[in-house]
Image (cartoon, rainbow, N blue to C red):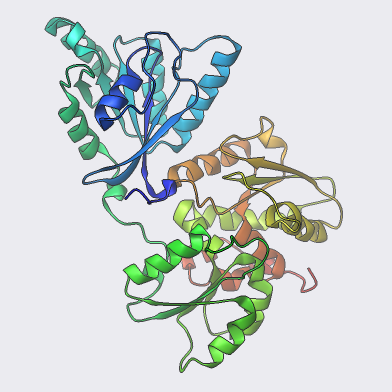
Length: 416
């Protein structure tokens, strides 16, 4: 459980005003000194994360946040960080010791975003029973369905809080999400094409490759891992064609020329477009590549920060392909992390990475912000497949998403 990637954990955000006891509650709940506790307002500045196992939900990630009532220039920045956590929270714990307008606004925000929320009435040991009852009534009057009085000092209510969290968490986290297992049958052979080049991490595979292989094993399918330059020889040694070939998107051109047309082919990035986001939306976004014109602004969005290589996929290769299609220079901006540029609506297209380090809710939040700004969004694998003229083939195993892409979307020139 401790090695489970953050993106596959249930993200539980701790929200509330300063000094309502968020950090103390988290420490008591996890039985560890995760966050610094002090009577000084604003002790928690940046989000603090704690990974743990919470049965029967399994791996979870608690995120303690700064108070939403922080003030001043630095306080405003802290509140912005807190709001970014809202976008990736699968579940929210709203901690409070006094029901105010801040709590009402937060509760409404969670409800608008369809984030399950549990209201924790902290410091219950400091209030008389009548005061606790009045506070609970105020929360419920605002629409809070799950309200639990608790105390980090005495431990009262912590078991009830744990049970309420488990029973209110999204049903999806009681099941193992499928990455590729629903696309194959037990006993099928899937070939995974993994280039080993300057961008490949030395001595290991990247996360999408590892998770795809594990999901195949979990679903009793076979996985054969080969380098792109050995794919032809590997296929020739098989007695029968594989059920599916999955490739790194950067090797799409070569792999598509080697794999027979009747063998299904897709990429790790396209699998992640479905696993972490919404494949149909991202497939539709690929259509906007045809509308690019010289001078248009394109946002290259990455979930994490990394040291770019000389021929980086997001900063060099994809921009080169897009400019070839646009017929001239484009204006590219690279954004790493959870935040969006303030002028998001000024972009003609967003091209996103596979979001392997994010949870699905965080990626869906970014898709929703792009939709609200009227900007089409696609991802690396879909963009590359589109540019190379093989998007229809790469989407053939996803009939619902394939319908979102018309013939014009996938008609590309071979010299890109």
